Length: 396
Image (tube, helix red, strand yellow):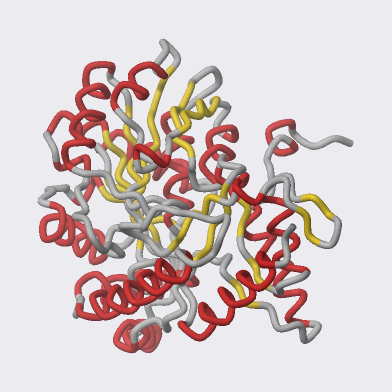
């Protein structure tokens, strides 16, 4: 008996693996500080939980239409007008079981064997695996710190072949925190329109932004909007990771294809979670501003702390809640006689010796870096950085 090749070729998620290993250590009463998970540490706002309870009490616990309830689609359409200057019809919206599910459905709907999908690195860990599951090939285009970890128009153009089907764009970016400007997006959009290439725009961190402005590439023109599959959700902005509600906006043909796939895989997302998402998107948005204020405090503190740690450097993130530390200056140094040759070994040492969980940059296509999430309390951040600094001082 053998497994399908497309399954055996998939790499496990290093972020989930690190989180699981840290949890196993905590279960053994080891005091591990986690900088690994991409999950806000705030509780889901009370008014959202109350909406879920109200839905349950009202009997909204049954199947819904596969692509989601009309009330949530309407709330999402209103959100696009309010926040992004975008007009979508209800038939151009699909609700799925998280933004990751929306991404999977989108890639499956447009890609097939022999297609290529351009993927700027550093990239989120699931992008290349989802591309491969569709039978397509990820074409990795390395970006640089000098360019702010952003794909430039020339690099995009030079990566296009007759097999290119799509580009995946993530702004604000996980793991770097980079945010694309309107001018940068316009350059990419012009090339995509000229070549007829889809843009899968992952905007899940749209609301967690600091020193920049979020621009959706779909809002630049009707032509690029028709080529864009916009991905978003409630997980990050409203601290609703466990509720599993994501959504996509695209032209009706693509949304119909995604809905057909969802018909025969998961069917509808949770009815209760959908009503909670209606409350989140339509309700008081001040909770978002409060969360961003706290994230900014943490970010600024980490910037100050990192400036005093030899051997590491990083760009200040403009969005999301991650630092992508360049640790290549530590390679070749030793800890207790063990030479550090890559970020994977450094990550293992930080976990076993300093009891701090981070994610190696190789998971994101950049082996000279590690990702540090600041979606944790200030006390954890302070203690964790103290541990990191103490261990790195012992390198020789």
